[in-house]
Image 1: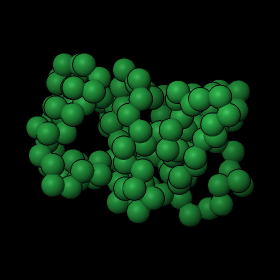
Image 2: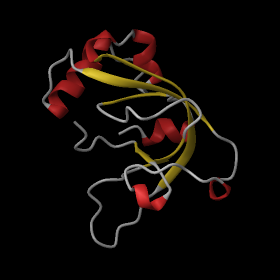
Image 3: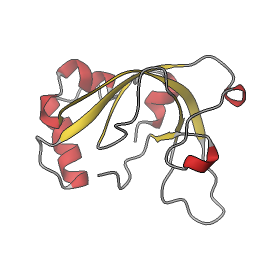
Length: 134
C-alpha cells in the first residue's frame, strides 16, 4: 500500500499492532509483501530501514503531520483511522506501536538483521502492504 512512498523515502513512520520488541537501532528490511506469498513467489525487498523510536498510542490520536509521514499526504487523520478501522475491523482507540524509522544507506547484504517474522532467517521484514496484522 505504501511501496511507492518507501521507494521515494517519503514515508518515515508506520503504525503496527505488534512489533513491541523493536528498539532504536534495530534494522529491518522493508518489503512489498511478506505474508501470504503464493508458492514460488519471492519477497520483493525495497529498502533497509533503522528504527529511530517506538511508542504505544491509540490509533485515533494520529496527528496531521504523522498522516503525511505515514505516506498519505492530503488525507485527514480521520480518513487514515477509518481506513485502518475498516481494513482490520478494530476499534479506533486500539493501541498501536508508532514506529519512526530512517533509511539506511549501507549495502543490505552486509548487514545481519534481527529476525521477525521468520526468526530463523536472521532477517526482519516490514511489509508495505496491509496484511492480516492484528
